Image 1: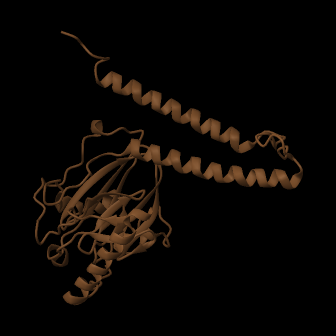
Image 2: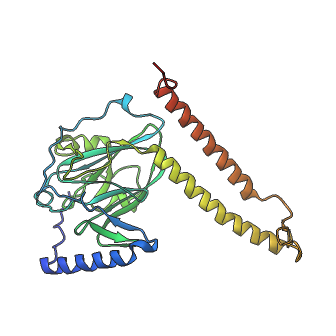
Image 3: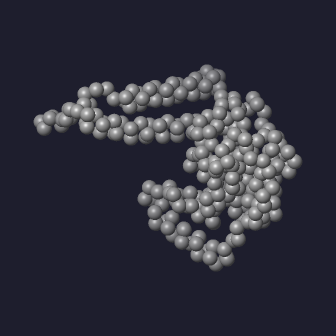
Length: 297
């Protein structure tokens, strides 16, 4: 087992100076369209608020859809983590869901596909903006498959004794403080089985222990659409160079365009149809869960 000493924290005055600078910078550019990463009001650490949830237990199979994937996040006990004032934040696809305190676990049901998982350490709740992070613990893409369960282990002092066999040794989640581990490893003594459920409460609210499948699906649609629109512009440029593009007339600026069908248009149309079917399926599911409509008494 590899053992490491935690990073030495800066002196308190320096922390305050950095915090005030970050707050000032955030105030200046918050409205400029940049992405600000923060967990203000959610980052309370175990020193101030120890985890008090129930002992670890897998959620029942009938409480999550096997067409999706399930990810458990857990943090083993250490004195370093127990003395923590602020706990690190966990993001999936750039959205904040919870801060992982000492000796705790939680879970999220996610849509199959590639999910981007990041952990950031806050400073008075602030964590970074755009590509800049005050302390980026992990930032990695994890490809998850339908019906599978994944275990992500976080510990600043010790790495797992076993590497996950499905990951390349160079994968970000095969090294560092946040690592993917097997079920067998997670279920052994002093691992996830000794942790307690990460409750959401007033001192440390979170949005975990739930399904975020619809959010994932909506974000996947938007990302694919953005990619296809970029590819469409490149396809039009290529057609212009090949002579398969008709310029608009000077007296009718709304004419012109490609003289052959665009492959990206076909893909965009298919993506929109797939998403429309997804929305219709959601509506049918909502109707079924609500009992088919309103009753008037």
